[in-house]
Length: 438
Image 1 (cartoon, helix red, strand yellow):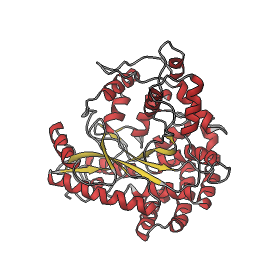
Image 2 (spheres, helix red, strand yellow):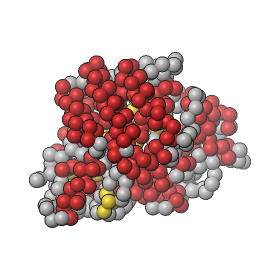
Image 3 (cartoon, helix red, strand yellow):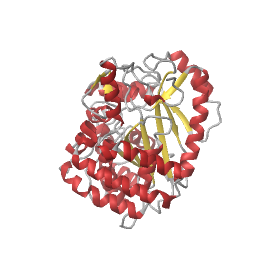
Image 4 (spheres, rainbow, N blue to C red):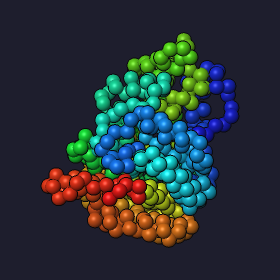
């Protein structure tokens, strides 16, 4: 869903610390009845004949040029490593969102197939090392900034993919659909979504020891860039403080490379002789990557990309049901409350609960139990949200195959890797969808 804007304040005018706090408070949570839904689906692009073969930058550029003239309702963008992303327009219902993105993905796959390429739903590239495809000042500055904390930043930029669900912030008033409850629920239920949909256990052809290596990479980037705020009863104030106290990734320049300051928070920048502008504030917010990002609506960023052509529908449907159906939202809230103690008051994803979710998934008994309760609630709620039998059946099949057995797609990938190592069969291509030959 698009960035919110209140249309106030000249973006070129310098802002004070107090003005920043007021602006962030005013735009980060747009409250009201939950009516709209969106999804952003990221994919790794690979050779149709063998996903382990790298795709040359020239071929990627050619196929993306062809895709840019395809009429799509979703916004098509390219990530720094060449990953493809489709971002749906805000939809009035779950099925409207599913229909739009499904049609767009069909069109995208047809263009890729003609060039011998396909897309795969994996949270982290299991074969290739990070390689930048896009060259732009933003990504040059991001790479320079993230390199200070190790190699995780490059992996996040170039070898990761996700399903991001966008939900309205909720009512101003308290209750199951109130914005305070939904903000808290997103951070506790987020760990359950990490565990249930973990799909990135391999990097460089070897198991990493984590079922969601993608989530591990985000945690390794650090709290300032990829962490959330401390949760309290005032989400607006907590997020405003987080924005002010987070490090500035870059200071843009019209001429030459962008500056990449070290250790400068946005709050400190507002107190400097050359303070930032409203436009700088808006840009700074786009350089923060917490697991839940308030952009007027709530952006859930913790879910790995999913296997199969339609695997992305399942986390979208589950999240929509657990947040937008009042009965399911209340059930999910009660189910996850005991999990909050395991966070020890530490922000996500840098707390024990989120680390356990990313490392062992639903092998954790408590996460498995909560996931089972939440999937059951989602299945009861989906018909009330107008979900078709196809979508309900897909969620039910996922529950039976994975959640009920304490498994996630990452476990399937590890089983396949072990079988291949024993020489039982070549590396299977289960996750590559209909376009991949058997």
